[in-house]
Image 1 (cartoon, rainbow, N blue to C red):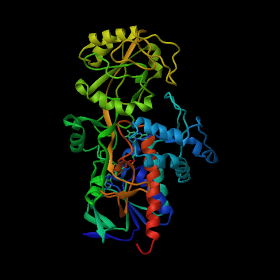
Image 2 (spheres, rainbow, N blue to C red; image 1 turned 90 degrees about the vertical axis):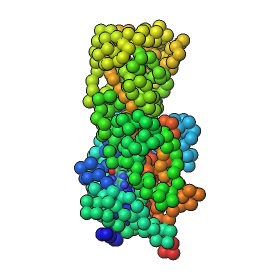
Image 3 (spheres, rainbow, N blue to C red; image 1 turned 120 degrees about the horizontal axis):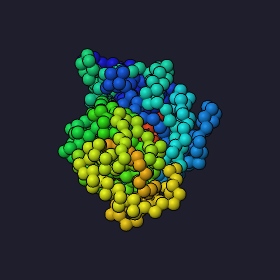
Image 4 (cartoon, protein in one colour; image 1 turned 90 degrees about the horizontal axis):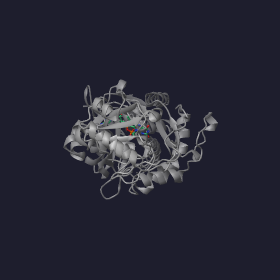
Length: 470
Ligand SMILES: Cc1cc2nc3c(=O)[nH]c(=O)nc-3n(C[C@H](O)[C@H](O)[C@H](O)COP(=O)(O)OP(=O)(O)OC[C@H]3O[C@@H](n4cnc5c(N)ncnc54)[C@H](O)[C@@H]3O)c2cc1C
């Protein structure tokens, strides 16, 4: 077996968490090696498909780099409250607090590492500061920055087993094109994403049909990084039966559909194959419902649903997947063309919905309080009658973004064993970890989590290595 033994830290994974860790470790003077399972052209995990960070803007001074937030009043406390609200109070409070308190400085640091932002205003109906970018560029910029600071990258290298000396991490074994290679290092940072791209694990945690669910991100996130930590004594934590499953274009490919959401559904209605509504489309802003809606749609007959809107709403919709809008003179015609099993029933549902609307002024940018009255499934905001032809429809399904279970960590990114003790020299970050997201997810928080804890993991690894008598 080949052995590689000249590094202080091995980072597993080349997404946001791994790149944050690699950059910080290299900056702190550590010899750092990054192992990436994917070939170089597919590196970057789910991060390469993502586009925005949620930032506590009152804590981030980006003006010094020439950027300005359009919304400047989003505080760490508001960010924290959003995490708690969307996770029904179940998020680990200390982890959530660590993210919201660190994301401002972390975004400043990423800017110093060469990440470029695009401060577009966000038309989602709630106030939050975000930074936008191209995921692929983000990955390229951070790999380049890490390499320039001395980090080494190995692609097509899949970490499978941690190695220990006297109870402390001593490296890991990885599968490569040339066979098993042992990478020796006194610290290992596992930032290998989650398990959602594994058909077997989707079936195990979500149910028998979930092997067929479309995967929005990288095909390489099949959970072996988490298993490696658990096999070494780490604790499994978080909501293993929960996941970010988004409403996506039903024509999306099975894997790596990327930006394939259909946004604006909150202004129209969603019908299932029986022509019925099944969800309060206006329950909250898009960014606070889309991540749980995919699962609800997947549970409907045929694993699909149909967005229906009318002409005045058309310009509030945004579809970025491969499919397209269907247009027709009646709701029934639109549903028929989309392949709905019960177009006439769907048209009757829309008629009953229209009768239950009594709108005041429509405001797409806030929870406008225009609700229905008298339906089994009410709509809480943006309830406008859908009665001005032409009508438009879109077929959508549920796609998995990432699972909510993972390995336990503390606020110092140390991997914890089943009784809560840190495992010496072992750190975890990003979607490899659990305990932060439950039931739902506030948009833009996955990258914030990965960036903050990747950086912390590197700082902790450096501190650990600096202690002589470990
Ligand atoms: C389509 C899509 C859009 C998204 N948009 C956003 C967004 O706009 N904002 C946001 O905050 N979040 C978004 N997310 C979620 C976000 O991408 C993740 O939360 C974040 O990227 C997690 O970063 P990570 O580093 O933990 O994992 P990843 O970015 O998934 O990286 C994991 C890496 O580990 C590698 N790997 C896996 N197993 C091994 C192994 N055994 N050995 C070596 N390497 C391994 C993978 O190849 C991959 O490179 C989106 C996700 C998807 C799928």
